[in-house]
Length: 371
Ligand SMILES: [Zn+2]
Ligand SMILES: [Zn+2]
Image (cartoon, rainbow, N blue to C red):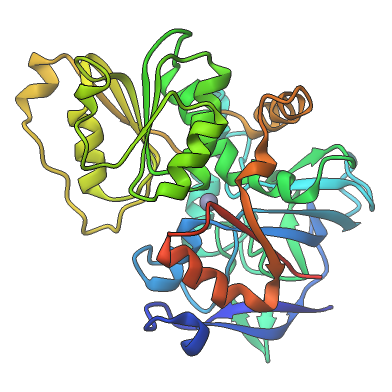
């Protein structure tokens, strides 16, 4: 079938993207869903920083590709082997399918699935190959998803069913920003009630981490970002203190924070987060710096300050367990995800959305609608 989609032919084109238009709106061809696959009508797709990193080339991925990895939609058609989803069901899309059989999946952390990860790096679905072509040419998937498209064929294992009354934009941001941000707090850092938490970078993932810290009853919570609008929103969402990165965190929290969550995606921010972590504290990074971005700090501090520095990917948990929990927390008013959505616009404005995210001044999370 045909579907209007945003095609990235070459990464690293100059900004502003509203002029160079690296994401070209074209009519792609989609294959029918193969074994274990599902055709999804995409109704909301988030503009996440790692989408921008693919467009600007700092996160190299095989091109040409259809972008977008944070999305949600409605099941349109299923392969006969898919028994637990039917047309009309609402689904959140998860950007790392889990095979269920590798060591990481067997150990209960499908977010680290090595088979899904290898397929993502190749730009393929987990069963291999792509279901997308344009004028006869094979087009890569991005992270097993490619949701900047009206329709997409996805592996069943990339989908988590959600209730039909959950606003679809919220289902979309549960699939990346919330899995990553809340998961970093709950599963990655394992923040206990009463512990101090610092969150570096108040984009979608950082704000979700902040909400995760509020749910965990962390105290105090300190939000760090150079943009005043984001600091104001952080205070509204439950941060106790919000500061510019140039301020000394120890003037607010003596000794530093017990847990630091870094969601900026720059080694300099990770260094700042690590150095602002208290003795015996834990720094968790979820940002995705460019591969050449090197981290340096006093190596001996790991021992003498008994610190832990760790990474977390896709929330270090199980999306099939975590997303239904987010839905319940949202119903209880504890995860007001809608407050993170700054703007909803049509897919045809995806290049303008990338400019706004690149500028970073006015947006937390933007959603594009392909229909
Ligand atoms: Zn993302
Ligand atoms: Zn696996």
